[in-house]
Image (cartoon, rainbow, N blue to C red; front, side, top):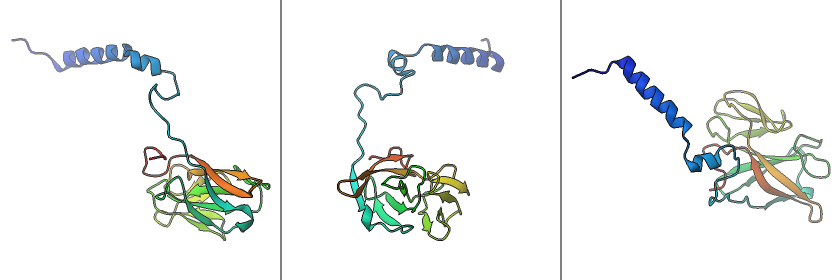
Length: 173
C-alpha cells in the first residue's frame, strides 16, 4: 500500500481547489459583476414615516423616534447651521440611529459638545459630519437616517437609512 505524503496531498488538494474556483456555476456566472439582486429575490422598501413638523423642532434639542421599526431608536437634530446631509430650507436637520456601531449601546446626544457619546466604550460621533466616528472603539460612523422635507406640509420624513443598524443583517426585517 503506497502512502500519500503530506506534500503530495497538499499539491493534489490545492490544485483541485484552484480548478474548482475557475469553473463557476451558471448562476454564479450570471451574478458575477452584477450589483443587482438575483432574479426572483425581493428588496423590501423602507417606510416613509413622518418624524416631526419642522416648526416644532428646536435648534440643538434632540427629537427621539423609531425607524424603520419600533426596535430601532433614532434621534433627529436641528443644528441651526447647514450640515453635511442636512435637509430643510436651511439644510440643518439630520437624524441618526442611536445604537453605537461598536457593540450596540445607546448613544446619547451631548447638547453642550454637540456630539453623540457612547457611555459603554466612549466612542464619540460627529453629527455635523454625517455621523462620522471621531474617537473610540467603533470602526464606522452612526447609520444616518435619510430625511426628506415636505415643504407643503412642513414635515420631516424618514425615508431610508445610510448604513447598517447594529446587530442586523438587513435594516428591514
